Image (tube, rainbow, N blue to C red; front, side, top):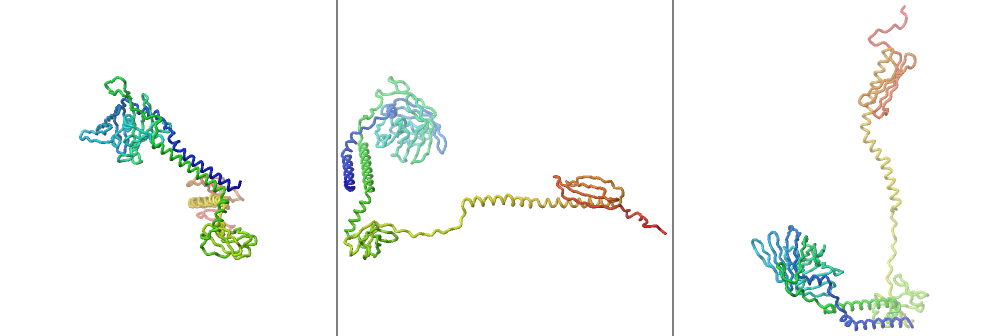
Length: 483
């Protein structure tokens, strides 16, 4: 069996499978039962009794604290909330807001900003109104268009929405607690047109269920709860949704199958298309151009080579082209050749060799720069900064050494019998040391050293003084014998 026949058989089998699925899809859609009502939603709808609570509302204009009571009966519910400055009463037909000065009515309690516990209104609607499942998984819709959404486990109501009002309101619920078998949220967030504008916190719940005998607190009818839809009931919306999903799945599978066949047999399809184009001259209306064919049967055009066959060698060849194909023909060759067109090769651009540093060069240069800065520049800056004070210190040391040396020279020159030895004294933070030692007969060596507080020698001066002479005020001794 050839590849073409094998591909055709595979395509026919795929088409038959799609047709069979299309025939069976209505039966599958009608036979699929709707799953039973979730237990959590059934418990909420079957609740009859009273729920008292204490909550507060966090809003941009402040915090509003209120206490409220919800009474749920068969086909009827009533909610009363007491605030600091007003009171709210709501029911299935609307409600009223009363303050000390005015009283106003409203149609929907969820649309009022003064409501502190939206869950109480939603619970009342769940207990008294009829609900039906929607095409969206886990979503239920009431007769007035309100929707509630269950989580993936169908154990909590995670949200509710009311798109039919003047503003697209939605609520999210969290931090659930259970009292007397009833799930109640303690955290509620209200979203208006998709943006959160209020947060509610319910700090306390008190649940009182209805009993068989009437009491003073809760008056309940004899019938408890409205009947729930049958678990085997079907919905037209669900049937249509299942049918559409099945059709979409089959179409996608068929498209993937045909795409796989086309990709695996792409060479055969291209060859067949080329043969059809070579026999149909209507698609080649552009003016042909001459080309050269090598002895090996290679045609060179736009920097690309095409294998057209050696029969076109040494012939006058005319090349016609369309955006996707080339048609090669010659008067001396009985049949034309159509080939897929190759894209024009872009000219090679010589890359300019620009001088650049590698990572190693950058690291080495940075290291050398750091060494120069730390080893040469910083010490030079420190030396320049200290040059002024150091010069002043050396000048003071030189002046001190010069004065001390002059004094000792004067003493040794005019006073005989000067005692030899060493003496040290502090002058202006500098240590002055004078050493007098005997030299040759009648002469003395004078050494003057000046040191700073760190013990470094700043100035050292050494001189020799000969035998002492009389002071200038005394008579000079006779130089020789008088006659």
